[in-house]
Length: 295
Length: 323
Image (cartoon, rainbow over all chains, first blue to last red; front, side, top):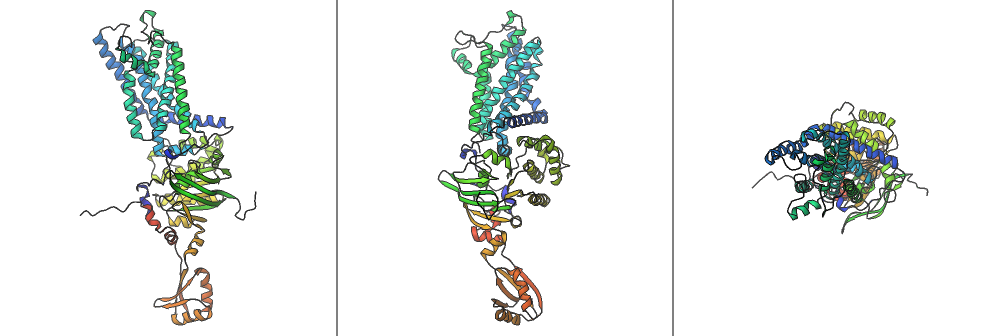
């Protein structure tokens, strides 16, 4: 008899969707420790999923490795000693970014999928602030992405970069910040776009141009004007620049790469990092505000 | 607090409304569910059941009216409501990539269940629901096992009110039985159960029912009351001498007894209560007495114009024949 309910098309009135929801106050007074516990467990969930999905994890490393070992080596021999040293060394920050980018943007995919699978409703009905849920998911996604970046970072020797503990630690810290910002950006898109197909189309549309225009493959100076403008407008360019200049701290000064310049002015690495962090926090605020209205 | 003959309530709505643009999905709902009661919500698809549950669970703000759940207002203090309720949605809200224990732990942390209590509580619930031997990620579980885990998840923090949206749709009989045993057990702990269902035998088990149609409550009461409202029971007697028996009942008991080819039929609002009286009056030997009550299906049909069996399908059946 009613066994067929699940396969029957859902009439529009039976399930309210996010589009119709208005703001529900969800702030819980005095529950800061409780919110921290919730962030902790949502963070832990992302890591558990990471452990459960080791295969997917290693598959995500294939592309960055291809770029580093095949594209890097190939272009190296074609260019025959590029200015500023090894092309693989030039490419390495971009490869780090690539390794972080895929899992970080996966955090948004996770939110959309959780919504579709019904998991998100179970979390939304719990006595936890909406912002807390988002922060937990983003921190978890950022940690997973940083771990991916760390694997690539361990291969710095292949790119002709000497291992200096301080430089490696700095790079790891920058990767964590970049991962956080990218995770939040994907979460921001995910709270607006609720359909998986739409979300994935958007991602695949955005990823390649953002990477090509980030200065990961070629330096900004000497490019045609329109390409320079596009590159300077891309926030990822500053991430790549910060990583490249930090990595260069491990090199003798005469091998230092050309830094990115805005109309002749070179922004300090610290500023690049701070701006990135601020962008991440802004995106998080926007995402949390929208998410608070999710039903 | 004013004295209320209904006793303390777990859910009370007054004029609860929800509209989407021009279209009203729930019209001025007035519901009162007493504490510790098992309350069934019946209605065809699209009647507004899920919308009502979403409002009571604070997932959807009402357009108008008020609702109090477990002593807290869904609009003013939604976090208090959330702390005190458990919800089983139609689609299980468990993470398929995690194990049963990992899912329960995640949920316990979200509800602030003490860690010491978590272990014993989750072990008890998993055993009660027959999941204590289940291993591996939840994605490998059967639908019935997932729904049972969902129930464990929703009870972990000892909610005062448990909402279940179609808890046993599409489940195997074993899972259904396990779930119902647990729900009955909850009443001993004064947990209020608020459920929607399409199964008449499940509606029959509720203390009280409300029939919802097009966003309005069209009938409310105990299953017995609802059935009594729409019509009389039929008492069917087979005796050694049907004609004499019918005559006796008409003249001495003043009953509207009809003698037919297959026995005597008497209609009454409460057929079961009539049986001893009938037998005491009759002097002829009685072979059998059958009381036929109107079913909840009749109640549903009466109030919504549809049988409950139709409501599982919102589209016409498959057209197997091609011209």
